[in-house]
Amino acid sequence: VGTQMIAKGLDFPNVHLVGVINADTALHFPDFRAGERTFQLVTQVAGRTGRGDQDGRVLVQTYSPEHLAIIAASQHDYALFAEQELPGREEFGYPPYCGMIRLIIRGAEDAASMQYAQHLAQCCQAAIDQSPSSNIRMLGPAPAPITKVRDKYRYHLLLLCDNITAIREVIARVYEEQKPPNDIQWVVDVDPQNLL
Image 1: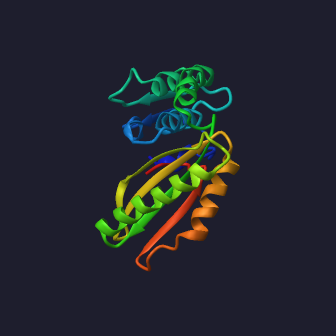
Image 2: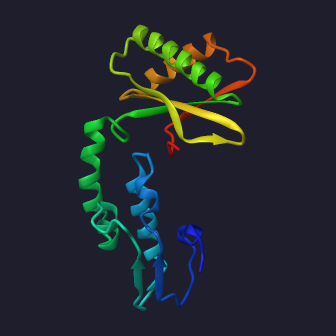
Image 3: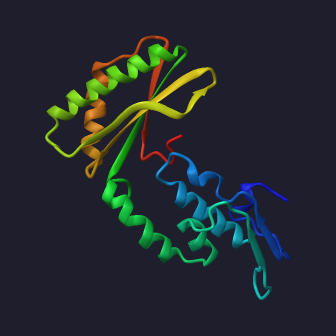
């Protein structure tokens, strides 16, 4: 019995059965990498069983047995997962087809945090409009999926472009010009690993 940490490269001898409970918990997170993470977890956990010349079994509990991540992981088929997942990311302009920077705005007061997030988005849009790179896209601001952490309300916005340097220049310009109020912080996350 263990947590997801078991999937991360530990080698336990004589493991013949692995069960993944609620394998699809993360599938429905509002994150474009949710399927990738689920595929990775199930594949890695399955790799803990049947080492060497020993056979092993993997039992996966899921409410979404038809989901690509579950099907591809159950078949140990990375190519299937990639050929189905990547076209959608390309169509919507998500990594690996573009660079992404996430701005996270957090503050003790919800209304003030939201207002500053909107102000920061306007400043980013003005900097984008002045940028020589015309294909920078901005999504948001919106409440972060996990809206409150450590008594701070959270909002975020995403900047996407095939040229990450162009986004960095926009962020640098905004950072120089916009100092948040004392009770609000904003954080820059380059190539965010999650959007929660």
